[in-house]
Amino acid sequence: DAKTTQPPSMDCAEGRAANLPCNHSTISGNEYVYWYRQIHSQGPQYIIHGLKNNETNEMASLIITEDRKSSTLILPHATLRDTAVYYCIVSYYFGNEKLTFGTGTRLTIIP
Amino acid sequence: SAVISQKPSRDICQRGTSLTIQCQVDSQVTMMFWYRQQPGQSLTLIATANQGSEATYESGFVIDKFPISRPNLTFSTLTVSNMSPEDSSIYLCSVTPSADQETQYFGPGTRLLVL
Image (cartoon, rainbow over all chains, first blue to last red):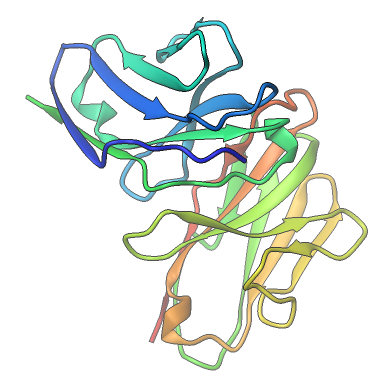
């Protein structure tokens, strides 16, 4: 699996968009980009995933660069409940493969 | 998605004892995994729980220490054997639903403290 690089921490004001970057310069053509978050040692929560195209769901948007070497997770209107550690993971056939978690980004939403 | 429950949610155990953690899913799944999260650390995969056969362990984890069972498509157990304080961690199961095989979902975790 390709390795990922994320900033260790970020702050964002409540109500603003939170943009979390992830570098995955060694990603292979068939590897997906997945985002999870973990709120205070609860089980990780799936957020979104994508291969090449940008994706959006009710939680977030995922923007993948054209060369696929980096991506950005966007939480459009951050709330205090979005304070968590966010993990960017790349993997083949994600559901059937083990997940290699990095250290993630600790996002703090500031009132 | 899938609804995943783990029992117990937390426990405090004495060194040298063993604890069995259960993972139950409300729907059929193709894959079940067990992860460990040590204090202040990220998640590490322990093993893949295979239905009807021995689990597949990651480097650094052995069956004698972490025996795993998976008798059917919706249930698995992880036993932490002969515990020491270094086993104090959160243990999490994750599953890939048969109806959504591109995604893994995690249970709430079992917090274990070994004294």
